[in-house]
Length: 317
Image (cartoon, rainbow, N blue to C red; front, side, top):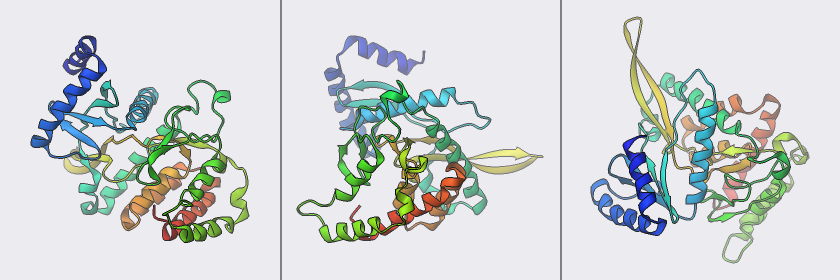
């Protein structure tokens, strides 16, 4: 057992959750003076640790543990990106390890086309691992296909920069989730005329989109915020035939607070939305979609993405 694991095990044995939380909040004040303000909702602590708190803490911890378990059981020839290790959970906050690498956004625009092409298959393989997570931790009967929820069937879902700050659901079917999205802005003080335009476009979309296919009824485990800040990478120099070769290695995926069970297209549409003005990254995600979505469903994906882009015009996401 590592020193850090032993340290936090002793803390849990000696102190209750509320006291440990007070200690972490006290350390946080001083950590900000040395390491700066929060990044992605997390505060850096000494010893390569991060502290995070908030209403989505339970979801994030559950998601990290679920993905870590799947990564350990997944046999692959390539090294997959890491996820943080959670060392302690206490009253709506938790401590996790820091991962190697820097945000991909710090380097992506400076990469050559060849180096960017190295990133795509690594992220693609990671998404395939996420989608291989069983659709239920108990049984298919306890979790109907198509249910939209947090990491576990009974937990609410969250997407605090795509939908709103509050948690929502779970929804037993995808149609109910989509209905929620369309009606979200029919509230006082919102933009009913924009909602109306988006709704008119949705109902006039090709009727084939309403057919109950696997693509339109199935949900998969999704990160829900795979943008350039949450993908960590580093440049490594290897030698091939005595010549130095630069390779971009994706080292980690962070910020799992929005992770859960969502429609197949959600991770892709969300990533495109987050970088809708950045063509190089959009192209990267188009290739990932082709590699991870079944060929027979690609046309449906393109249709859903077109609807997403149309709704960006009308609604304040």
